[in-house]
Image 1 (tube, helix red, strand yellow):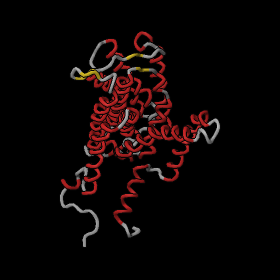
Image 2 (cartoon, helix red, strand yellow):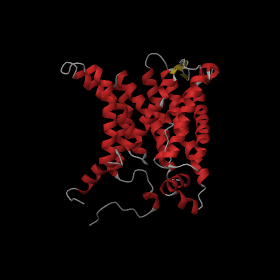
Image 3 (cartoon, one colour):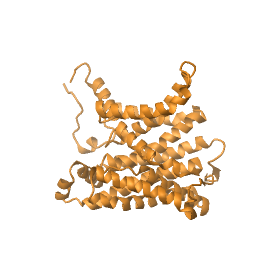
Image 4 (cartoon, rainbow, N blue to C red):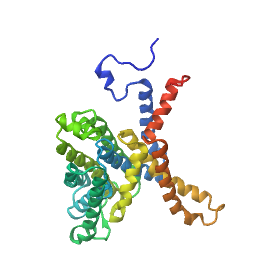
Length: 350
């Protein structure tokens, strides 16, 4: 009697969805994603769009931190590069959004590669401080380069058009849902297949033991800088989407708090996991919304609840991170894996 999942060739073993249960879950998720916008209100469509952009940024950060082992606290700054590049090209050069987005992503990749150069000599906490410096340098340039960025004043981005259809105004959330979904799927599929390639395996080897990877012939400097560039490309993509979706770019959206939020997404979701990035982005995006709605429901019961909600959000945010680090360091993706294993092995304990 066979027990377990077995394959007799590499083609079947390398499939992204290898079992019937995985294929069924994928079909159900696809159906939900395609049907959701036709029944959801603008409020839930806005949340879905925020989650989609967060997924792109979280996957980009996880490529660097989770898969390559290079700690980064410059997420907010790199997103600012993408957002301001796309906004400036659209507002002042008059370029359409489908041109500004790839340009902004490439510019951010270049900036990320530049700040990734110190990673050859720096590791751990020292590298984290270096990327924190990158965050502060980028925000300083944004707020003081008045001629280009407008300084501390908000940069107004003109509404985008696609095939003559205005993406702003009435029904904008519905229209942007599909655009953001396409970019999110592209990012997810790229990341999944990246780590099935030689480059992705080199990233993982550097994360596990960079000295051993170098002995094996991997060019450490080349791949570390490439990891920074690849990660920053998708982070810049997320920033560019924010610029065109929100139509206003301001430095206050890209502070160190943004960097910490995205770092929390990949820690809670699961480091070194593409699906973990998705789970973490959904969790962290919805957590404040759940707390706000909970606070409103308790407003009549607990006096002054409205004033406590901001502090409550920060407290719960920190508490959730601590709980995951202590109880399940591998994140939500490991919890989901444990659930699947339980039903796969039931009624046996092991």
